[in-house]
Amino acid sequence: MVDLCKQAGATERLSGPSAKVYLQERLFAEEGISAQHMDYSGYPEYKQLFPPFVHEVSIIDLVFNEGLEAKKYMKTL
Picture 1 (cartoon, rainbow, N blue to C red):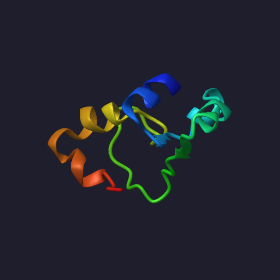
Picture 2: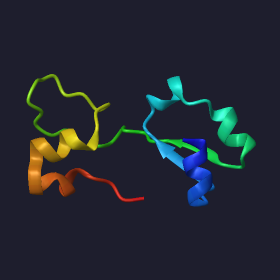
Picture 3: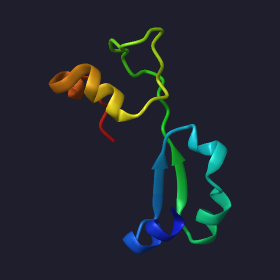
């Protein structure tokens, strides 16, 4: 991931909060790439196939469950 970011000329990396467990942020910092993590608080819940609602899923879950309506649930940076 560090190499991909370097090849793309990235200075920041944004990922979900679960990545804190497996990404070695020190390696990014050594290459001058800051590590940011999404905060899912405040996102509206949508109907998922298997309740209860879980925020920590892929965007694919939102798209498959909401289809064209998915954009109503997305935040912009």
